[in-house]
Length: 381
Ligand SMILES: Cc1ncc(COP(=O)(O)O)c(C=O)c1O
Image (cartoon, rainbow, N blue to C red; front, side, top):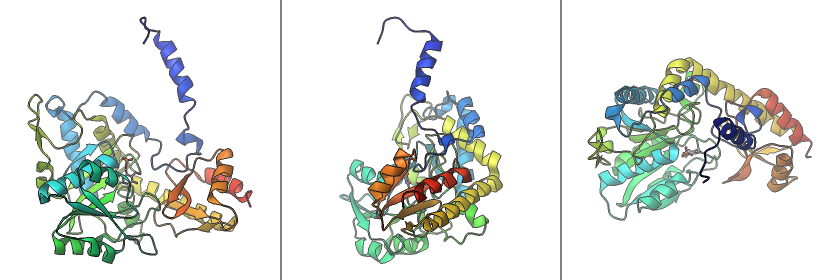
């Protein structure tokens, strides 16, 4: 570090030089991200609460009230108004908290968790941090978890079963009602990872999409991850963890001697209130109608892309359920498609199970972006 500081204009100018190297959602080129450009209202709310620390809530009682209201609103969205939880950094932290609560309440030594083979890698982190063994359940032909496989993996060491509402790679919704039945029978915690689908499935159900129930309306569901910073359009980092009962938060409660609260259940200590303000603001501003239109728009674009991919001579690896399209070609390898399209400036990703080019139709993508993408794709074969 230099001794003498430099002028603010110079600092900002240099920062712009770095920022120009970043990709932008507005360019329409980011096709492989589950995040999107934050909504202006969420951004304004975020900036307004930039100083607020929910790790010391006695100092920020307004933000604390906002968090309580936000959790209630999210609970209402997910089938149960009287719910307990927090606004945190994202899906990884939410999944870690859910598994931690399940483990603490079950109190089993050398416990195990059962996750679908399609689960996000955050469960691997959670298992490692919490010293649990992670077992992977098989998927059916439609890339949803196979209930019989889950049932066969349950033992007296199982502390939690995970179901996913909107898988990371393919956007599939696991059969949560079936998982709920076996979790109730075996007295095991069922956690639903709706980090991606939580902010679209309920609204698409309103719009007439025939999706299975996945939330607290299903009696065996004990906790749900829902990420406002994905389809919720909040700035990052904004995640949500919800528990059916207060005992789950209490099971993780640690005394906090020098703060304005007595105890804390979150993993992080100092915790921004800005994410809470942004989530609250967007839930209020967009309402069910606003979110429904956004989710519907993404699904319409998904349909447009899927049809265009087939017309261009490529193959879908599975029928899209949410706003993710995964495809391949029988004529050129994935690597060739990926390299050629990257050279043309498209920022995609490759899924691992099954291997495919993966595109997430997030709200920053418009029809003209997808038309340009399809034109480039067609030129490959
Ligand atoms: C289903 C699911 N769960 C959890 C996560 C982890 O979320 P984050 O990256 O916000 O920690 C993701 C991220 O893509 C996800 O798709």
